[in-house]
Length: 379
Image (cartoon, rainbow, N blue to C red):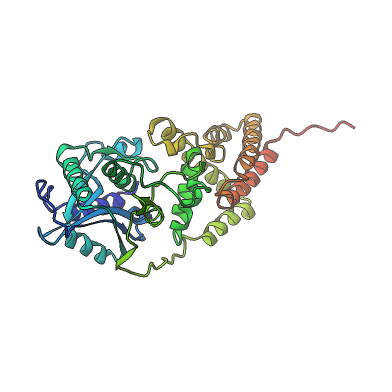
């Protein structure tokens, strides 16, 4: 992960967590209380591409207006980066004033929407108490998982717990994969889309039956009922900004295609070997992440057939001038490319990685031909 990414996260969470940790755990809410799910719009930074979810409790009688956010973590955690990669970094909830919350999103120019929950006062009180107990007792601490445990799923869990039933369920886009669900969020962020496609393995090819993104929860709330009435009272816009798609001369599919075309048509050994070395290093990282990380999304990553660590061996034997082994390793990787193509032929990222498959195929065939043992012709 890039250092600036973590710095931005740390800054955001510092601003959001400056308010005191508890907002009156023993407050008895009045009948004027409104409890709502807040959905925050997407941004153009890496940490904001998918939006955010929070819970708001507003009681004008008790002068209470607080937002509970399950997306915080401690940037000073020892071995922070390795814990993040491994998948055992602890996240937790923080509470902050609604005014501070909104001002932060106004500053970032990200939209904020609100869906008030249509539940009786006693359940609003129960949810309020559950939220505060969760913060005070440490129950809000959880191990982050991209699909299974995040700021959105935690909000779903605590609301369902309060209602004592599985009221909020996924009811939209359940017939498409998690990978397909993610793709619209990457408009204007081509390499983030490509990177997500190749680092995620088999799990994201499952049908998206779990609520794991803020706008999925927003859409589901529009359709769910509780006690024979709609659970949410419509969708209110608090602030709205036009999400401008960023323009970049390099972060787009055209630059990607031009670079790969250059590798294919320039036909230069040094460039071919540099290209294969990049694939090999990425493959080694995928192998490490697959065994080391607890993120299930990174496991069983068949993309390693394209980003193959054995390419390191091919480069080594090229340096050693062992043509026979170079030829055999090139054939092996060509065979693995063919297998990979048939594996992804019905996957959402086929079009994204196909140029890489073609480029790798051309480079490997070229290398195999150059190192094939010539059979002498006897006349």
